[in-house]
Image (tube, rainbow, N blue to C red; front, side, top):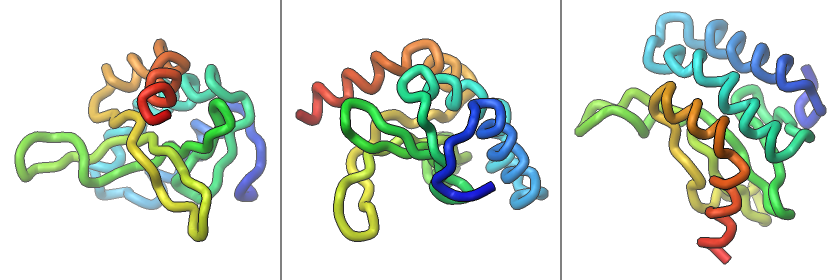
Length: 132
């Protein structure tokens, strides 16, 4: 599946679930997000129907002429020193290497993924108002 190509939400979700199980076979803390992916993809689809897979493990989309990406982050979730990982949505800034800007949302549990799906346009609108 070529990077930067437009795909349906079904294909995108399938790609990321397959990626997790192919690349992280023995890693439960990474694979645990597999059940959240459909919610996140469908939430992003409500915002922007032109999602693009930028790298094997990142999903890029636009909102209000700003660029964002969804990615797995090992350093979120859990409590204290024990981090279980989760999905992070961050703004992508212009510039060399496409640096990351501020975090829009961290998804650390299935319930948070469902909440993002139900409220994705409002979550992004609130973020844009806050950073403007």
